[in-house]
Length: 316
Image 1 (cartoon, one colour):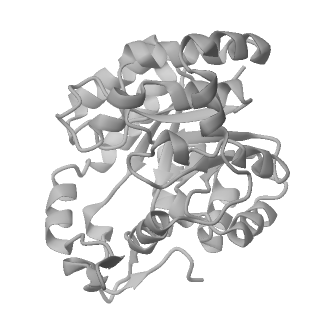
Image 2 (cartoon, rainbow, N blue to C red; image 1 turned 90 degrees about the vertical axis):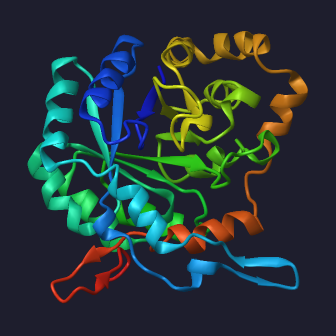
């Protein structure tokens, strides 16, 4: 049986009551893992090169993501520390597993104390060895996304996590991800490093439905991570790549089928041409767009030191 990791992201809009409704809806749909993100606007780093972006000869070299508007946007979504404890308690009361994405090393002691036992490491920190060591030492189970990561970084992460219960998620850091860029065969490579692999799906739901997640499940993914919302698609930043409770139930039920039955049922949702398109390449180079996103998101958050400077997740 495969499991769905329900990504709440910022679809809660900083509203505790909305978050609680999302938890109830996801649990009712049968999900096993519910995940929130520990996002702190105070940990956003200011890197001037992204304030205006950099282009040369008509080609984008650095994306434009101004610091101040990003801090203001995220500050409206900041959650009180007590909310994280309430999230753990609520999930456990519904017999679902609470999971959290840690974006900085400074968050680790707090998240452990709150009661999280399952942690997610985002794609851009797959190469952050100190953060991976923290995850290994402080949590029972780790899920690491591998999008926009070089093969040497993924293999180094596997060595760090050796002896730990963990999973690698294949991920393509293009938002939203076109079906032709999915490359599900990449999971074959990840399975040479760990027995548990999955797929983090950022496809556009209104355009592509559940095709990518269903195809990944049919290809043998142990986990699917997908953004989740109970609001309209235009009400949050991540709404367009988020599924609703009915779609979540479809994924949950599909993941409970034996793999041979999934492959047969997949034909109801995905054509053979689309499936072959999504299989893609097992070994591939990162695209220009993925590299642009890597440059921005790797180092977007960092631990704030007493003197006001930042310590990045890859720094000892």
